[in-house]
Length: 502
Ligand SMILES: Cc1cc2nc3c(=O)[nH]c(=O)nc-3n(C[C@H](O)[C@H](O)[C@H](O)COP(=O)(O)OP(=O)(O)OC[C@H]3O[C@@H](n4cnc5c(N)ncnc54)[C@H](O)[C@@H]3O)c2cc1C
Image 1 (cartoon, helix red, strand yellow):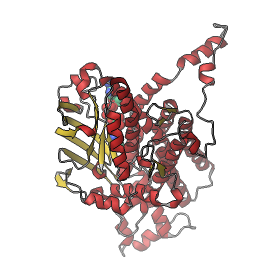
Image 2 (spheres, rainbow, N blue to C red):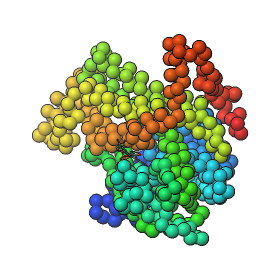
Image 3 (cartoon, rainbow, N blue to C red):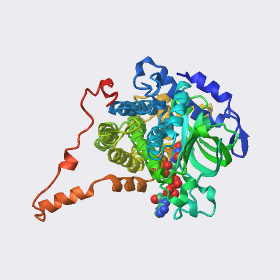
């Protein structure tokens, strides 16, 4: 497995196809460094003996030890380890660990390519497994480009005035395909090795050209990445780990871009557009059940420090709020565990989380995110947006006053107090704050998408039947379908081996 240094060295060799703020830039542009630092942590943790088995796994295809981000889950334990790995990494970087989209895309592709092949006798699964084995052997990282620009939201892909609102196939040759269109909001694509492109929605027959999935090197000269980096205000003297991290999202433009045949994983099988899109989305919502609790951990931590700096940590309304954070994050985490336990083994061998539990966990946290920032703001007061700049804590004219008056709780030094308020500012009132708020609502699909997913899978009728029975309308009540459903037990959950070929 690669070290963080090897990952960074790989970026240095990539061809420049990034555009930021009107300039064409390389992977050495300082504005994407905060995001690169996040990605480096995912390689660092996998090197740490302490996290072996959490951040690493045994490849289902090659039998070799691989970074868990490149692994297709094979059993419930794998999914639970994934959740732990995400929370571990996300706590380290103070939020989004960014590598889950690529992981969720390989999960979706491992399953859907097999299903397409089973129906049509195509060879997508073999191509995908070859690509994945190479990806794992080289310990690469991938972004997932699912979200299209989408144009007029009331129109299907084939009905758009501009066909490139959704990435689509222009031409198929013996050697491969040519694609055009635009993907948007693609996190970490600027510092990924590969980009996995998947459809974003269900398709009808007329949309067949838009039903396309493939892998492309992130530095392919056939694409342009127009990148929007987000990072924190640089520190002068008061450095902190939180300030090293940030994120970049890319708009990716395909203009008759050539994709060799061996990298094409779906081409015009429109009936599978929805399945592939949902497999990615539901796997991603399961990942959220590990990542959003970590985001909540960071906001809760900031709230605790702010309460301490104000010396109100023992006051009852503060303690009440603390428990609210615990309630949300642990319920979401528990939903992820339940999704793992009630997941299913697919024909491909990949083990897939239960969609209902994954969706409710994700939705709970997505809806809670503004409330969590509100609790932090209530407890912290207004300093987060009014505190003078760091330079004013350094200027000899103002320093003595700043050092004296920044201390509210006399048990804290002026440096500790200053560090706490800078952190609270970074967490609650920075460009990253807005990114996390909007990511909380829309990342992995807007709330309406989770509603749709629940409305498809959730058995509302079973509840109606309970009410009909209790109201005396029906004489019998058959509860077996729902309550006799078994989680995937049958072995010691702490021992992954027995799940092997379950
Ligand atoms: C920070 C961040 C990071 C992200 N990272 C990634 C990534 O790495 N990869 C990736 O693929 N995507 C990524 N996304 C995209 C994310 O999945 C989408 O933002 C999300 O699915 C919502 O899509 P949208 O932004 O196009 O909003 P829309 O789909 O346009 O939704 C906006 C509103 O329009 C409504 N709407 C949409 N269609 C209809 C319709 N037909 N009829 C009625 N109402 C409609 C929706 O309900 C919603 O209320 C990211 C997003 C964010 C914010």
